[in-house]
Length: 427
Image 1: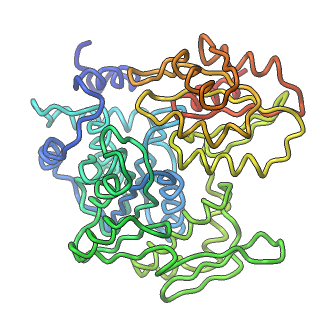
Image 2: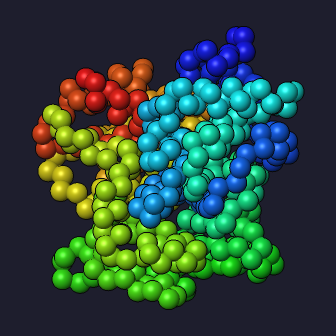
């Protein structure tokens, strides 16, 4: 395919970007720094980097919304997307238009020269160009993989948030939590605020923060939350300087989202944004923040639950949320995953919650085949797993066989939940 230009559509650009690198993931910052220097972008007033294994997208959305509540014009970069690439680049809380993204991609290409960039690196730089062009003054940047060598880490943050660390992307980041934590810790900077969002941080987080002189706040030690008694559904947040009571729960479901929200509030406290740390600001914001594919419920002939859980930690949270549902019938799970994921680790927590399984092959070169996935599911749960020829076939099978008392769970990958959600919306 010929190099697209500013007159081409985003649908022309995206497949071309995938041809630029022989590998989908190439860790390292040298190439990104070189092109970034050529772009010569103005630095915004605030940059917050977000890394971690789970909860990055939710935390980014909450922080973005709170900063906007305080009057900032925000640029928020996340990945991957659910339905449209535009979801990755939000300006003022809204996905960037095709024209804005194409213009940004054209600017990156105009200065790139012969510097090779991956799809993700090119998209990251385009997001920054789009933010700069739109005059945004607060950037929320989610690391796509790890932290230390992720393209997002080419931008110096004013504060960082590491949501948690568990096993994921082991082929690139390491086979144990300490190795992975070392990569996540790469977003830390000397004398710069960093929040670790879950209790009991890996030793690598503590040691690297101390060595750098990063200003580390840890959940359970420097801040925390508790659910208020009495069934009102409210919660309390305690920071080092500020305590907030009678907070409304975030719209995003589950106790884990309280943990994510707690860490976001800790970032704001470290940045001394006390005007945002009021019950009024929080209660007007967090109950309005919604994200597709995070234990999302769609009611049709039966109840559909869509969740992008794709690692063991996320699957355990998903299993807990399923256990809180009243399900009078059976639960069927449609699962598609990438081949580099811990299939057994994802499936094991769900075995006791699922009555029947359907496997699919998601799009992309890294996909696990439906046949191989079905074998792993059957071995783990000791239940048969139907192999569907396509995602659409799996969805149709589940819908035709379910009743109003049943639940259909769609999980395992963004690359499954996105197409499934589109199908549910349009059929």
